[in-house]
Amino acid sequence: MLLIVASCTKEHSKEYITLSGKLINNTDSIATISSRSGVLKTITINADGSFVDTLKVPKQDIYIFKTTEQKIAPVYLKNGFDISIEGDAEKFMTSFKYSGYGASNTNYIIAQSEESKNLGNLSSIFSLEEPAFKDKVSALKNTYDSILNSYKDLDTVLVKLAEDQNKQIFNYIESNYAVNKKTSKGNASPKFENYKDIKGGTKSLDSFKGKFVYIDVWATWCGPCIREIPSLKKLEKEYHSKNIVFISISTDEARRNGGSWEAAEKKWRGFVKEKQMTGVQLWAGEDFSFQQAYQINAIPRFILIDPQGNIVEANAPRPSDPQLKTLFTSLGL
Image 1: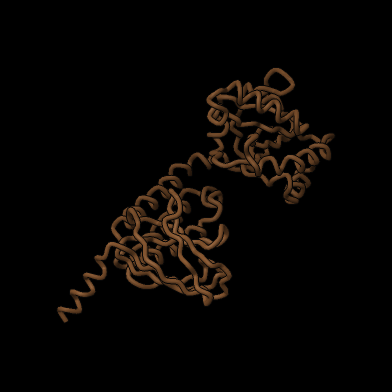
Image 2: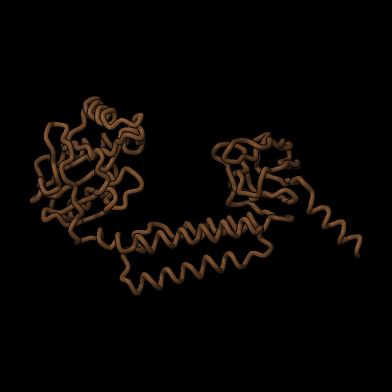
């Protein structure tokens, strides 16, 4: 018995990782293990989908196991682990089963990831009244703690990483609750003031009082923003005679233009001209207050404000979404 224990201890203290497994329905000949700095190991996959290889990692961390850019899955690795991955190559990650010494770490990551998807759009949480909000946050914390505690023998580095991440998630939710309540439906909209108008002069939100205001917060470097431009132009033309104004606010800034605000403004002006963008074209320049008030951390972002300056939708449908015209119709537009 002592010899068996000694043998197992020696195996788990080895300075490399054994990674093996089998992928059914596989058509790829290699898999790679990657970190943020690049590929660490290329592994040959046999004709029957099986593979086995060893590798060393510079530190215990979450790495990426993939066969193509579309087929990727996380795997937590630490020298000494002996992990097997089995699953369907056509259902990458969702079908994977991780087993062997150290596999519980990856199984925890998968479980945590699946639970995080259930958070969905945080606006539904931010819209709750305070007692319900506190109950919801408390229940979420218990769920996250329960997932973490249900996996035994987790690596201490991963436990610390998970605890820090969970803390960040709930700090974000709690700290932004009050802010998001201010931008809920029916509240007075935060204002922008003295944004440069492509046609000359400046405009403020108050410049458009008496009309519905549909705002597109965008930037010239944003691919999804650019893809919405044709739909926005079409929408602006269709509703040109209605009591609504379409405003595009560019957030182009110095950081993406060699540190120059002049270059950022020049790029915005050139882009608007090139794309023949319609509606009211404004540039926020160095003023981030409107973005911050609406907690805009991803673009494009669309906002709808009523003629009295109150919020209709802080996260309105995109121009390409048919639901937007349905919303306009419900407002009598």
